[in-house]
Image (cartoon, rainbow, N blue to C red; front, side, top):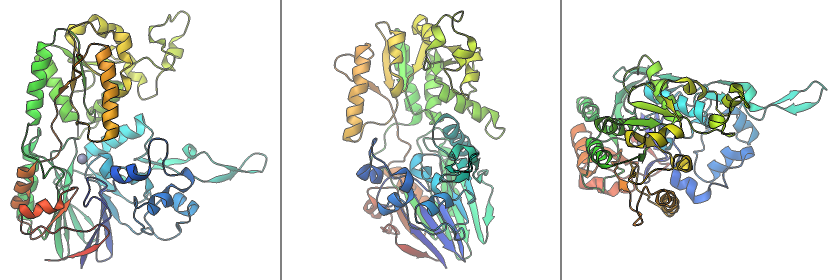
Length: 495
Ligand SMILES: [Zn+2]
C-alpha cells in the first residue's frame, strides 16, 4: 500500500513537505519553510529560541512531529528523543527556493537529500555567502573538557561535517528501496527545478514542484507533461499558485521591455532582480548587451556564476563572471579601504574588508567600483540590491538615469512599507520622478490558469491533488479528477 501525507503546502503557497510511504520505505518530497506560518508567530526580532527551536516550531505547527527525522543534537537537547533509528530514507528536493528547502537544516545529516546539480550549486552559494547551512552540518550543544579539566561548551563551527546531499541528473531514474524515482527538469524562476515521478510497487505519483510555460525553457515543462502522460499516473500533485490568474507576459517580454527602457535611458540604468533567478539575469544581460552597455553585477551573483561555470555539469549554461559584457561591482567593505591611500593602509588590510569567497573577485580584470560607474554612466546597467542602496551616495547618478524593478509586486503591508523606503532612496537620487512610479517589469515563476489546465489535462492522471495554492477549489473547474485535500491527513494511493 502507498500512503501520502502532506505536512504543509496544501491550502497555502509554500511550506511543501510531502511524505510518501510504501512497503516500509519513507520518502519526503521537499522540506520547505512556510512564510505565512512563520509570519503568524515570528518576525525579524522574534524567532524560535536557539535552545528550543525544534520544539518551538513543532508546537506552532511549522514542523511535523515525526520521530527519527530531526538532527540528533537538537532532538536530544530539546526533549525530542534523538536516540531512535532514522525513520526517513530520502528527501527529494524539487528546487532551491526557501519555501521548498528552507528547513533542511533541521534534518538528520545522514538522510540522503537528492537534488539537481544546479540546486546543489545554489545551496552551495547560500552556505558560502550567507549564514544558512544546507550542505554542511555543525553540531550544536556539545560539551568538552577544557585544559583545566572543567566541562565547557563546544563551539559548533569546530564540528562542521558534510550533509549527505546527492546531485542527480534529470531523466536518470534511481531507486530508493522498492521505489523508482525519475527526476525531470522543469522551467521555473530558478535553475535546476525538478518535477518527480515516483513508481512504488502499487502506485505511480507525480509531483510538479513549481512550474511555468512562459519562461525561457518551456520545452522542459512540456517534456514533464509528456512523461506524465506516458506514465499512467495514479496521482498528480499539481501546484496552483496562480490558478486564479489570466495569462500575461513571458520572460522574453521582460527582456524586450527592459531593452526598450535601457536604450531610451540617457545615463545610468539601475536595476533590481532576484539574483538566483539566472533566467531573469539572462533577460537583463541580453537587454544590456543589445543596448551596447555592460551589466555590473554584485559579488554574490558573480560567485554563483562562478559555481555554475566551475561545475562540469553546468559549465556554459550561463555567462562566467569574467564575461566581456559583465563587470563585477566591488562594494566598499567595513573599513571602506577601497578608495583609501594604500601607502598608509596595506593591501592586506584592504583584503580584510572582504569575505574569503569574494576576495578573488578583487583581482578580476572586469572588477569595478563606484568611481568607474560614476565615470561610465551611459555605458552601464548597475544591479543594486535593495539592501545596498547606500551605494548610490557614492555613485551620485547624473540626471537622466532610470530604474528597472524586475521582481515581484509587494503583496503585504510589510512589503509595501519596504517599497516606500526603497522609493525614498530612488526619488532622492532622481532614479524615479516625484510621481514615485518605477518600471515594474516582471513575470512570475508560476503558470496561470490556462497553463495549469494544460498540465492537468496533459498528465492524464487518474486523480489530482492541488498543492501550493490558496485556491484548491479552483482545480475542480479544470478537472473532474481533482480532490481537495487536508493537511496532516494520510491518503492511500492505489492503481
Ligand atoms: Zn519556487
